[in-house]
Image (cartoon, rainbow over all chains, first blue to last red; front, side):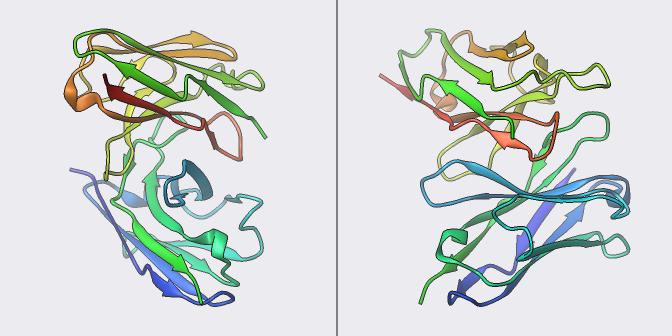
Length: 119
Length: 112
């Protein structure tokens, strides 16, 4: 069974940094593209970043480019999101989501971790 | 960026009655590989999103057959043949044809 478990969220001041992690299990992690998607309180879904299986290709939303860095450690079955220069508008639940093997989209999602940026 | 527009934004439905949600993309979702990467997600209250339908009309594992998807190009529809209480939530369409990946605004399905 596919499991994705995010961690690392919390309260951080504007301008601060935070590192999110996503622990994956139940599938061959190193063969899948992985994603971060966020959801601000009471709002819709916003794609944040994607990384291909061996980190060959990395993509970012314009809203986080140059501030956030996605990475993965296939030996540890883990996905990461390094977030710097955080702003109030980055406050959201951050979900880790898997890309399926043979089509583009999101097939499995974690439960999410809440990031709150506030002074 | 591809803009995804859903209608309606709210859909009060009587139990046992059908529901339909429309999703329109600002450009064709037909990928150069010949596939159309349009999928539908369901988000129940307090839960993460869950995949319902992928590539327009394919039901994901474990999804009841009362959910169906259709469409092509820029116009897509999610239908629930007979709404059940557990179907309450927000439904999102999303495209995987190009980056950035984008989502519709969400359609809230509630029971009348």
